[in-house]
Image (cartoon, rainbow, N blue to C red):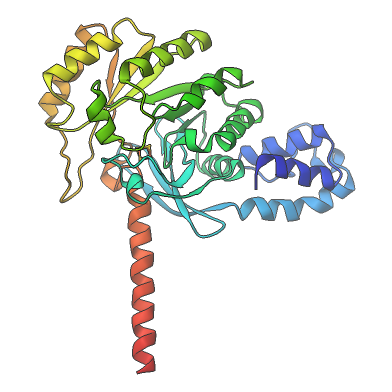
Length: 352
Ligand code: SF4
């Protein structure tokens, strides 16, 4: 269900725009649709046809997504495995300090070589309703004041739904525009469309390296935009909206953590209206990539900082619980496959 369909369904039961606004806000707060306000009960506000029709609509919204499992981590984050109406699964992460990271696709077509989600390819797009439902579900557990589109998927590949969700959250979801963060590998469509939106979010750009050819290897199906051009586009957007770009740099030992890379990063980002998030890779057993040593990570941060690049080291939230993007889903999908195989095996045995 897209947000527009929700609004049409509400109009069909007799809701006027003011009713639709109140119902949508209640949903996004994680409350019952007929929650009412402190000053006015819903029975004094909604017409009878709306009150009668709301339970069916609430049922449809509940069917969009449900929390299949919760995985608290030592850093205060809470990773949620969210099951969609058709049984597909995505991840949302409640971050410390009232943030929420949501998914925009099941799987992803970009195929970044260091990302578990990229391994599955794109399975399907999420609707705007399914993205907003992740916020509604998360708010049943904790306050959410910031939403980042950095979970599974490349938001630029599902841009209509993502922008619809951003506009909804900025208008009815009580989230400041700069606290909505769209993360992308850098798709020209993002730079064309974002400035025209009523709600203009902050932007996170996945840079990962300053070298064209290495970027093409690490992000095999990302649009071919040279890192310097990407930074120029980012800078233009940051100056227009008045909040900085967050550049993402997944740090892979021996791949993109060399001194030459850091010199080039300092040259590219110095003086930019930007913040560099260095995200040391979260290695799992048998991985082709490794996490740099804590000393190297600290040295990189200090080096860039000293050269005028605001640099933060960020760990993938909830590292101790399969923290990399897509790892929980991959594990759950594995378990489902295993139990299907076991079921098939026992049925086959029963038939022998
Ligand atoms: S890192 Fe992001 S863009 Fe790359 S494959 Fe994973 S989900 Fe897609």
